[in-house]
Amino acid sequence: MLACPRVKSPVPIRVRADRLLLLASLPWAGWTAVGAAWTFGHHPFTGALSLPLLVSATISLAVKRGVGAVTVMIGVAWCQALAAFALHAWLKLPIWASAAFFVVSFVLLIAQAQRTMNRRRARRYTFDHQGADRPDIG
Image (cartoon, helix red, strand yellow):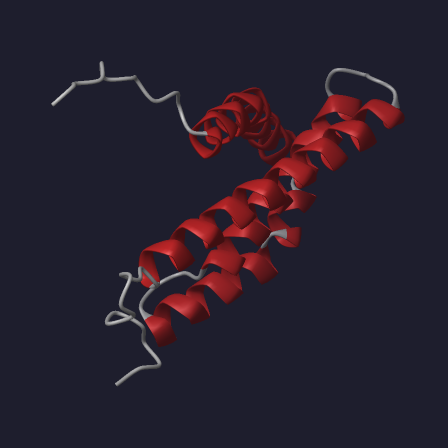
């Protein structure tokens, strides 16, 4: 029997896309944390505007014993909006730079959410070739 040399499989496209998305999100996540913290510290109205999110998270914790993914995404989007405001108020960048930051941040947030939902769905519905693990076949 002839043996073929093992061929190393290249990194799957999905893994490369995940790494690229992570690397693209890191600078935005860092500035989101810094900018939101600065805005919270220097503008007291942000605390009042954050109350509806805090109330919804508290109700979710009381009723479901956990915070849902949508509540977390809304919180991250709120922090991104505060960071975009900090670009204009703190760093004195033009308003279009704040808008561009917010749009790119929101697109990255949606991409991360889609990736997470696909991973959860793939974990929940793993099928074998005979269909024995399918949830609709009893």
